[in-house]
Image (cartoon, rainbow, N blue to C red; front, top):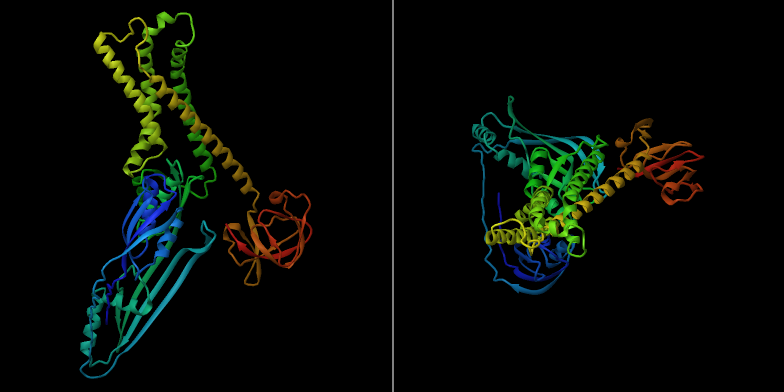
Length: 521
């Protein structure tokens, strides 16, 4: 068996100019995309200068692939300079393994592989079909050995005690992974049987995400999840605050995925797909919490609004109130800054762990600056004058109200955002409710009624007059008029004949027809 390892030249340093970067998150997104390419190393991206450098081995990848990877990440790049590196010598490693039988007689080898799949065909976020379920792969190898060849028999027994035979089977079958080593050896009169079994399963999990502020956050979560061993596909939707992940059950689990998201600075929890009320409860809970925080901070901020008016208007009682402005503002601002604003500090800490900044960082730094500056001035005044009250008026250079009002109105904005998302989710839920719950399909020459979740691409569906069309497809037999007002707004039914496309949730009117499913989900 020969193994050749080539380390020939073709390496170069690429200096790139990248447009569209704004922050440290952009750097991480581009770097993560490039590091997934074979032959790319020493990646260094700088958002401030808009440039990046990397080392590329052209034996494994090309400059065009590097530029395309950056484009996939959502940015544009062009090569400024290419510097070729000195080529290294080719290293060849030969391992020749020969096994001979002294008697000169041969033995027979029979290898079998049986694959069973149980599951269904679903579509991913991009609309591509993929299999979701369990795959059982049984493998066996049978050797017929003459009785006098004890040497060969001993060799096979030795292979069975190690994983070498598993690798031997892979060389013929092309499999990359076998979860179980050799299971058994069954001896016959003149034969040996070795069996291996592989069970691979794809599992899809939907996670609800918390703490995202922009599309960069979604990209960071997606990259973090894809680095978990066993993850085959990960899609994060920023607007819906959801993640759909396909992974190998034998390599990882849902808990590991949630922990990976937590390490990236965000929170996630598993969503039961059958729980249709989850999103409503989530938005209602979030909206209620934000509204309570707003009213709490607003009530504490109202006295400071009165104190601000004292500087511009001659309000009765002004002279008696001014000495108390400083101490009252400090007392009312502390719970707003560190209770209502605690979420901003948590968000800033999470972003700092990822070596980047987000909106929480901006608010936390801005309000903390105003609060700390005012607190220092207040303490200095108290030390100098020996009193917490203003002498002859209010204590100068205090800006506690700035921090208080900033946090109050940002929380108000977050509440309005959560409320809007909740209403949007309800509207989408009502729209989904228009979809049919079952479909009448032709399978194995028989007409059966099945759940819409069991419909797969390529099924032939029968639609009778007055029924809803369950999924999208193309008519293969019959004709009718279809009410598509829910999609186009057109009140008049549209005539449909063989070859025409039909859309799920629209209503069949007069005729009956059969159509082939083109899209599901």
